[in-house]
Length: 151
Image (cartoon, rainbow, N blue to C red; front, side, top):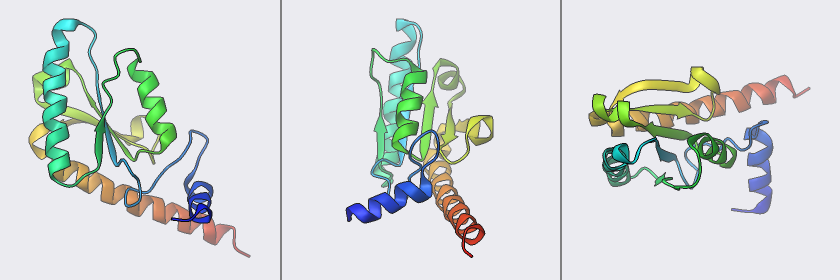
C-alpha cells in the first residue's frame, strides 16, 4: 500500500468526524465496547463481550475489544469513529439480560446507523452482512460524488 493510495482513501472516504474506511481494507473491521456502571455488572458484560469477540474472530472478522478502564464509552465511541472502524458493537448490562447487542455503522451517523437488539446467536451473520452493506454503501457514495464532480 503506497502513501498515495492511503491519501486517496482519506480524501474519498473521510468526513468531518475522521476516517471512514471500507471494511475490505480496514485493519480493524469491528470494535466491541463493553459498557457497565457498577462493578457487579462488569463480569457479566465482559464475559458476553469476550464470547462475542471469539465468535467474530473465529469467523475471520478483524475485531478488537476496547475495555480500557479509565475511558468513558463516549470517548471510546469517538476514538474508534475517528480511526474509521466500520462497525462498533456495544454490549451493556441490559443487552446481556436480553442476550443481544447494539451495532453502530460508521457510514451512517446517529440513530440512523444504529441497530438495537441484534441477537448474540446471529452475531456472525449480522456483522458480516453489515460489513458487506457498508462496503457497497461507501462505494456508491464515492461513485456518486465522482459523477457529480466530474465535468
